[in-house]
Image 1 (cartoon, rainbow, N blue to C red):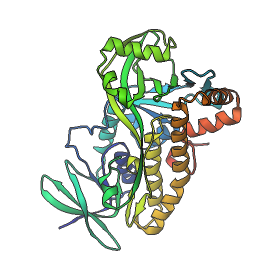
Image 2: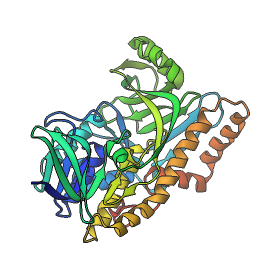
Image 3: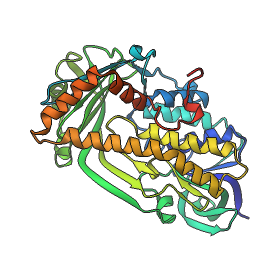
Length: 402
């Protein structure tokens, strides 16, 4: 007998798990297909530092996830942006906008543990784990089915709506026949936890360079989350550096803004690509998060954008009789269009212009940094986007009274 749900989510990472929690609040029967077994965290929940926009913090608080974090988050109260080789800088202060912080820094592994704790409380959720998506199954006007392989062998599961939340290399997206376009930036991102003589004071630093951005994020454990972009051709050599040489490299990029770097933790490396699905929906199916779009990490908008995908979908489902109705999916694609396009254009444009080594662009970039530092209108636009208030924002992302 085929098991049937209201909504079936393939992918138990950041966006898929968050969507499952949001849908459970609505009283829906949800299935979640996860690649990892119980007790094992998905690979995405590693030492990466997630920069949660204010809209994301609002939503995760409403979903009961933030309360499950066992360690303190790092508030981003100030943002300092500059570029190596260019003059000028942009500084943003949260109190100038009547806020305590622009967002919070959370370690991915700790966020994964909080999500897992919240998922464990859901009584209507059916978790298929470990399970592998094999392909699409039978379909009709009312249901969409998939085939999975798990401890019970190969079997079929169906739902009124199928959600692909299975990441950049989405098997669901491919099975649905949704084409995608990919761009390789030729950059690799290194991530590490580092300690300096000066403890974080709420300032997030982002320093652009020819081969990608380097950022210092204020974690809640008196360490900095370091993100360092290098040319992919250099990645192997950078990975081979010992701790002393790595610290020297980061010191050379940032100078003495936080005094001397004292120690570093383990480093992880990730290639940087952009992948954009041509469409987000199919018959009784939708792709969300990185399955719909993977973007350059500059500006730290990836998960924030993906969560707004999930929450917009949940909000539309709340007011519908059929979660997989064509009219609902059309409305979803329309609502997500502005936020998605503007965020993709901003991150891609910023990544390209800041990495361009042409000397002709240096004075233009410098003027741009100076303008952003002095123009209230330009700063307001940047702040609104950075905080996740772009386009038709899901209700859970908004703040009461704003």
